[in-house]
Image (spheres, rainbow, N blue to C red):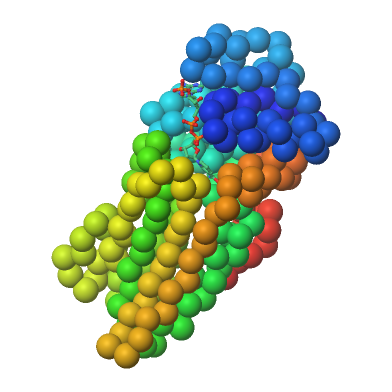
Length: 240
Ligand SMILES: NC(=O)C1=CN([C@@H]2O[C@H](COP(=O)(O)OP(=O)(O)OC[C@H]3O[C@@H](n4cnc5c(N)ncnc54)[C@H](OP(=O)(O)O)[C@@H]3O)[C@@H](O)[C@H]2O)C=CC1
Ligand SMILES: O=C(O)C1=N[C@H](C(=O)O)C[C@H](O)C1
């Protein structure tokens, strides 16, 4: 398969390695310095573009790829308030877009586990719940996209929480997310349920970016030849 990389930072480089190991060709690399490549024959020859850039540039990159009718797999976080525009491009404009706030298999199993735990905890109101995430100091957004997905899953399943808040909850109906930035941590997410009697903690701790990158390449393989708006549940069937 021919893959175009949009964004050649920490994730772009990791994805390149895994894509080559899996026998794919990198048709084109677009970074912040060469946006003219969107109009090149190499970019137009790609089966799929994999996009990992920044919250500010993601939507512009999707529009450029859609203008060339190239399907996009993206993991960029921090832009989801514009998601409806991308969904409309898929539903009304015939484009293809695969999005995941976290591409790793382990985190997607963790999402399913957290949703299941929240459904159990719905019956046990002695427990309050809060979340923590820790990432490297270069990260631009907080809370992480993964933390937001986890929080949304808890809110859907735990009736006593209405919304998530960053840092400090002001009432019992708010789900607190604390975000820490330390060194080069690839990503740690923890959900904590606490009662007067005890604490139940579940954690996903990424050892490196390899799991994210492998998931993104698998998503590109899954996306080839498909249409519409796709996500990890389509690929992994981990609905919970
Ligand atoms: N969904 C998932 O599984 C994961 C998601 N992420 C998310 O992916 C995104 C990228 O992460 P990461 O690779 O670590 O970040 P990096 O900062 O290491 O890489 C981003 C790259 O994109 C480049 N870039 C910025 N603007 C543009 C643009 N307009 N066009 C093309 N390239 C551009 C940057 O260039 P320059 O440095 O010169 O600005 C940089 O090379 C983040 O939002 C992060 O949260 C990360 C890991 C896993
Ligand atoms: O910026 C990162 O590094 C990561 N970003 C994603 C997020 O915001 O959830 C995924 C992963 O946690 C690493």
